[in-house]
Image (spheres, rainbow, N blue to C red):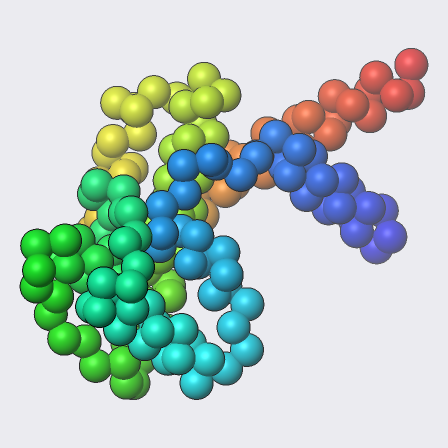
Length: 167
């Protein structure tokens, strides 16, 4: 059991070393980095309320990537044109919004990684990216598949490192 834990930590460490944070995070992605650790539903509602009210009043001028698919991104893009539809932050909506910006960020992170490492071209990822637009479940399945590829890369890098260390 100890060996499996050690191997898992080695793979995780390897993945972190090859998977660096992108420098072009838009407002929603930066918000995800802050909000992914909220500890209550009330905090989640308070954060989204603050963001939406601040944007509506013109207190913030957030930048959003073109093509971002989350509801928050769409609301912010609407606000650029002076109209932002009202959203009721009740029920599952705040959790759904957080999930959407997280999935959107992860998709962009993986695309950036695969292209940056020259493991894929944008053209080859287009069909998978289209699946990410099809819905959250499909998007999550695509991201899981991309994560498996990343994990395999981490394993192969860890394995290569172990062989070098054993010489």
